[in-house]
Image (cartoon, rainbow, N blue to C red; front, side, top):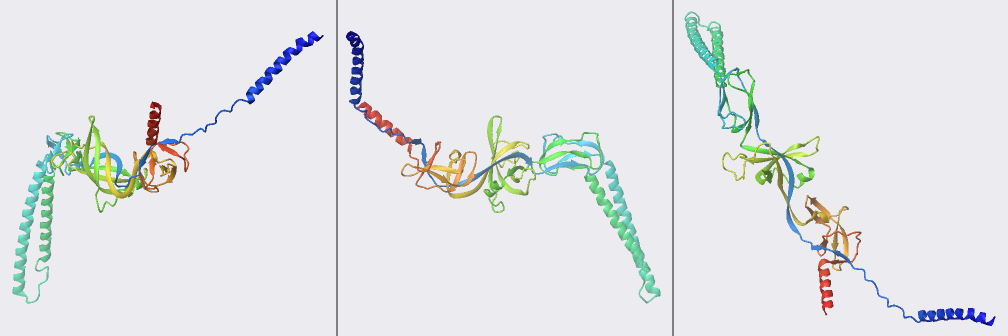
Amino acid sequence: MASGIKKVGIPIIIILGAIAIAVIFVMNKSKPEKKEVEIPKFLVDIKPIEFNNVEFLVYAQGPVQPKNQTMLSAQVSGQVVSIADKFIEGGFFKEGDVLVEIESVDYQTDLLLAEAEIARAQAALDEEIARGRVAAKEWSSFNSGAPPELGLRKPQLAREQANLKAAQANLQRAKRNLARTKIRAPYDGLVKTRAVDLGQFLPMGGQIGEVFSTDVAQVRLPLTDDDVAFIGNLNEKQPLVTLSADVAGKKHFWEGRLVRDEAVLDDARRVIYGVVEVQDPYLLTQDQNHQSRLKFGRFVEASITGIQANNVIKLPRFVLRLDGTILTVDENMSLKINIVEVMRTDEDFVYIGGGLNPNHQVVMSAVSNPYDGMPVRTLADNKLSENDSSQERSL
């Protein structure tokens, strides 16, 4: 039995001894050195705040239209006997050019008849004047009192004077109708459409075509209330407008002036239309320096020179956050959230009128979950630390 106890007890003693030795080693093991983990500051890109004098630009777009567009019509009736070669779609003409001629034989006859009527009325008037003189002499030879008007044939004289005036009016009408057989251009322009041909009979008021004036082109630009506020008073100054369009793959530019607005808001779009005028759009007088002709119907983009503001901070639009704030970094490299006064924004920039400390720097990079006092580091600091680390490694 003693041998059995030895067989069982020896292994147990060995195991207990091993456990005791392990416990002693664990208890005597030196503790690891604790090191504080340094959380790196958030890396940002910053830019100094600069104050500038800014001339605001207002952007809009619209189609080019003629200042005057006229549907020509006949003032007398008759057959078309002549059409000018330049009276075709796209043809240019000068003021006073004869575009269409109507047969004038009947109107020449009417003129001759009116001239004959003048001669008859004048003769009748001269005869009545002579009769009145004879009547006055006869009355004075037989009576010493005042003669009656009928005795002096004054009513008959007035009738003949009226007949002469009527004949003169008929003569003037006959001359006008004869002149109207030649339909002339009301201004320098071009032909949009032609609606008449040789041999065609034109009734009075019949349309012969539509023409556009070419001295001035107009562009109607839709403007919001904010746009109007940054344009200024058009009665004091007509702003310069730069028009642009892509023509055959090349950008072309034209200059004009914003001369007026239409003074009434559009019911559908709730905007007010400003009118830009461009002189000599087709380069017919060679007084303008346009690159190419500004043709009617072309859709153009417009850049309107607006008012000027002083001490404005101009920043990329992306730095303005959705809640209307801008992030800056102070002298202690701490983040600040600033509520700013936004004067105007466009597609690329935001213009700040106040709310930023001039000694701070604007954060140009995105910051997730920012808060006031958040410690940050800049790209310049990051590059400096990297250089120091590389020098230590080289040593």
